[in-house]
Figure 1 (cartoon, rainbow, N blue to C red):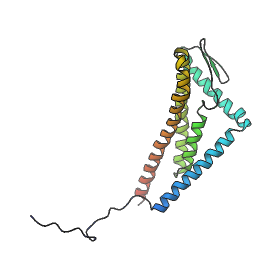
Figure 2: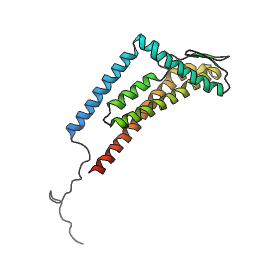
Figure 3: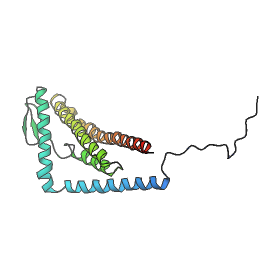
Figure 4: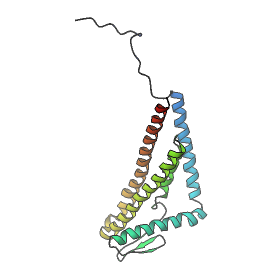
Length: 194
């Protein structure tokens, strides 16, 4: 057996860190957080304006009711849609603010815009994310209507606890997936440019 040389400072190899310097990383994190909070506060402030609610949010919510009504009709529910109300023979629901997916979209939009990525990547994320959030919300409205028809005792819990949580978590999960892919995409570009 041969003797192994003692590890000295000379023969210890340090792996190069792929992480940015602590100061730069910290600065990016703080910038993200500040921009995210400003965008979120600004968008929710605009959303609270009566004119925006009456001319943007209400028509959008009526569109959510219209699409949900189409799906419910396909499922044999034979519903009538009036504005934001979906009415069947045994149950009716009014889609109000907070149930239209708008708040989740705003959280997602603020996070995507605040994240350090190319504008091309951000726009792609915004487009796909908004559609995905509205698909989840459509499933939510249809499921809640069907819950109201067939399991009315579970409607309130399904509405306020289960589905509200699922819609918000879907927006957060979408952002995490998007941010990870954005980071991987920018890392691949950086390595290709080197």
